[in-house]
Length: 345
Ligand code: TLP
Image 1: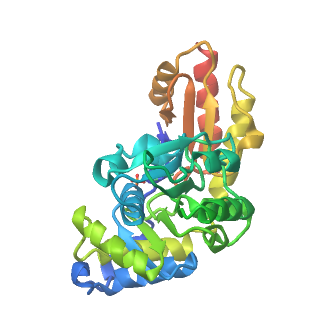
Image 2 (image 1 turned 60 degrees about the vertical axis):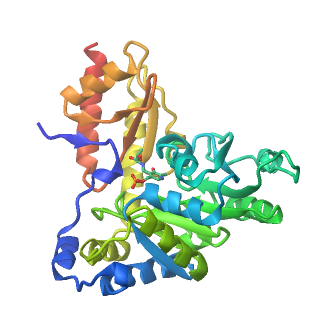
């Protein structure tokens, strides 16, 4: 039985072109600044997001952590969405290693933070209060079902934050999904923010890595934090090479993942008892409720026995993420299998 893996777009394997580029990559010791391939990837990333400079880091988690460490000082307070990846899935690193307090503002279903709620969360000067120094956004938004923040919203919320003296960091792990879905260049979505991190290891299909982008000064300081965290890598051009191919060849095809996500959602809506609104699907993440007749974990287990892998997001909430390894035919097959699991209950 063919396994249809919808757990995440992180499961995508490098393409043949990436593997060839990795084999042929010109290398050097990147801690000495000697790896030409890493430099090419960093320059390309900075150019694509219209920032002065970029830094290659091992993961999206490290790109967010390094950004927070670089923007803040211990004792500061930072504003993050209540559903943000930084708050949920980064092991509390910002607080543990950066000594910052995370103040959450509720994410709307469409991933936005209400500007009035953000304004209210920013601390005025008072001897009792920590300084609020950073606002973190996420685009596309993982827990908000892959929702994309628009250029207009990003500009308005960044202006509000800047008006109060805050910096703005964007967790843009899937920023190219947002750009493709909205039909705008990614740089328009990142222009209003001071720093942005994105992953080449998700839908873009490179094996490892993320790029943190910002001003030249910010990136020089970030480079030192990366070193402290043990993220200074040596002949890392061997993986950066795949990232260059990813940025050159994999961005436009993300639209295919959005189409398969929509197909999956439409199909799920036709299965009795399934909780989903296909109109809400904007990119490659599909979040739905399994039927009441089964618990979430039981549903996931039964699907897994049928070779369909998804993840449980707590309760009956299920997440499926379309990706390059899953074709239109695979989606049709997955729907058949899901339907039979539900029927044979
Ligand atoms: N998200 C992963 C898991 O951690 C849940 C996934 O499968 O979606 N920001 C966002 C918005 C992310 O979705 C992720 C990864 C990260 C940061 C962290 O990236 P990595 O996994 O490279 O540390």
